[in-house]
Amino acid sequence: MKSFAEIENIRKENNSRLTLENDNSTIRVVVGMATCGIAAGAGPVLDALKSETSKRNLSNVVVSQTGCIGACRLEPIVEVYEKGKEKVTYIHMTPEKALKVVEEHLEKGNVVKDYVLPETIKEDGTVQDMAKTAFFKKQFRIALRNCGIIDPENIDEYIAFDGYKALEKVLTSMSREEVVETVKASGLRGRGGAGFSTGMKWMFTANAEGDKKYVCCNADEGDPGAFMDRSVLEGDPHSVIEAMAIAAYAVGADEGYIYIRAEYPIAVQRLKIAINQAKEYGLLGKNIMGTDFSFDLDLRLGAGAFVCGEETALLNSIEGKRGEPRPRPPFPAVKGLWQKPTLLNNVETYANIPVIINKGADWFSAIGTEKSKGTKVFALGGKINNTGLVEIPMGTTLREIVEEIGGGIPNGKKFKAAQTGGPSGGCIPASKIDVPIDYDSLIAIGSMMGSGGLIVMDEDNCMVDIAKFFLDFTVDESCGKCSPCRIGTKRLYEILEKITGGKGTEEDIEKLQTLANAIKTSALCGLGQTAPNPVLSTINNFMDEYVAHVKEKRCPAGVCKSLMKYVIVADKCKGCSLCSKKCPVGAISGEIKSPFVIDSEKCIKCGVCMDTCKFGAIEKR
Image (tube, rainbow, N blue to C red; front, side, top):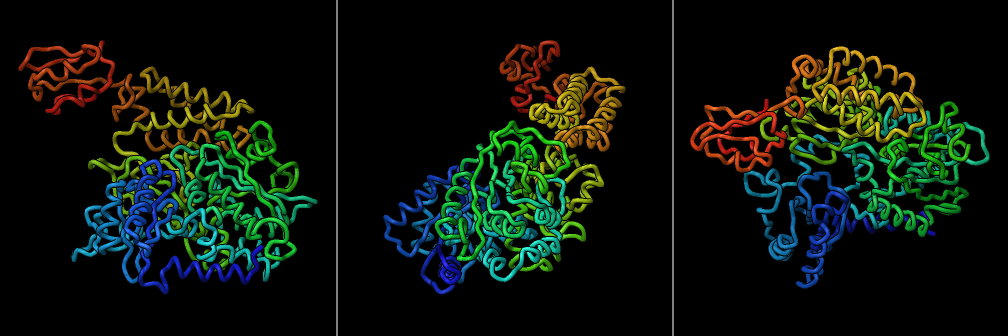
């Protein structure tokens, strides 16, 4: 067990080491080794850097791994830190490029500019920190404060940046009530969905009667396109562990569980390492830091059921039961895990807690808007140039995210909509691109914050098809316990399939609205109650597309195959016959040097002809 004094010594020593405060010779090199980096090939890059620096006896170069740096589209990423110089970021790295970086930069001191992000090269030819680029300069990192900076498998590096300082503070100088009041005063709202007050939830659990209480973490991140919680756990697992210990102290619990989906093997592995390290240092277990407070923590792996992101279904799953929601009330704060009072927050919510304790409620509440305090992490994906992980102050507009942080839409296409909140959220149209991103503003326009997936769509997306995509997901993920969700979402999907298949009627649009509203008011849990949101939001904001599908039997975006056809424009066709040769079903015919034609009856709408044509003579209609 480490004493308070020993922890402080570790903090000072490692902070000095990582910041190169008193070191003019050491070069610190980090490689992004989260899922995004590893999938892009970061493992061999890390190995090459370590091997080559050792081979060249560069004892002043320290190479280590880190978590997600944020700019996922640029992976594999290598960053070089030297005292008195701006950080250098190398992108799209390979083992071969890594060898050149070692030879030129790490040994000779010459930055290899061919491998750095172009936006980081200034007019005078010098390289600036990637934090000054458009992708990062409007971000404000609280939950992601250590991601991309520390080695997530080294507890000393977490401690170096004020890690476990908040836990020490609450155990030595704050009462349980003061901790709860601090969280309440901060204005922190749950980052997992509806945005309920975190402090109120802690207060309810603290006030609940019971001889045993639990603290749980929802790491069952299941929204399509969402990877915020995974990135926190892969890049900074100790922030969640410390926060859960603080929460346990505040509500009177001595045992906790992190419920994480088994599809997150890297996050699971790093959590296991972090928990063992915390226990070894006496930061988990009996009499933490020599006090009378004890708290133990364990993992529970989920099988990937989306419904287990709903708090009561999650608790059932931890107990070994089928992952189905329970009727509420009673709420988990009163009767949760094994019918005992239970506090449940998600990963991002917990990641904010140590900073709130260290810097104070006033500091945190000064960020964001009046009713939505702090920052929000988003997984930015879809039709956007800068895909990745972003953390922005609440109140930042969608336009700022799409056009500045996201770098706009690829290929000169127009922004059409953004989906927030995953299958439970809604589509924000281009006409509302200036909406501030906060809980209340999103709800007011028919969407929701959700856990933080933000999928951008352009003019080539069909909004009816988008609604069908999310309904297909929720139909598949429904636990089946209540009929509004089990049967109702299936009926919604069937109507959408009918419309996109060219067989819809105007009455079908009315049926969609009636059924969707009925499901919202009668489903048992949040999954069912919010499942109709993509349908309602697309009808409200893109009614013209629904009308085109049912009245004109036309898909304006050219996505729904049953409602489109490929046509050769005679004036543009050069009669080269290439499209005819490539067509897999022989649907294209004609004479050489004369316009060819497509037989719509034979055409399977695969698009090979359009991809093949060099003259732009084939159109989708």
